Length: 151
Image (tube, rainbow, N blue to C red; front, side, top):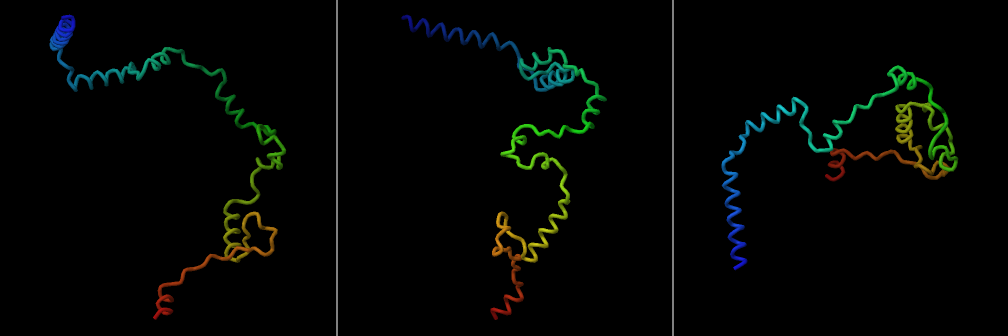
């Protein structure tokens, strides 16, 4: 008897709650879009409560003027190295790594291409070995040469 009463009460509450909400009509698409646009325009649209908490905080102001920041950026940098570059075990060259290169990238590229074409380009780490040299890239035979050879 107890389970039947519990079942009937649950069913009655479910039906009563559905009838109570049946009076309210769901909002139309146009009204939802209008509410969204209004909230977006007024700036009251936040994704989460965290956004509300962030919006309530005062804006962080800088105590340094723009002119001071520009002057600090234009001032010469401190040549002292920091971090692992300071260690002579890892960086035997010291501050030389911070200097501008003496040769431009285009010059280095042209020298490498010339050495490759001459066959004097040595693989990395094998520059001391007089035996090992790089060869010029092989050119694929033309179709005409192939047909002459195989006809």
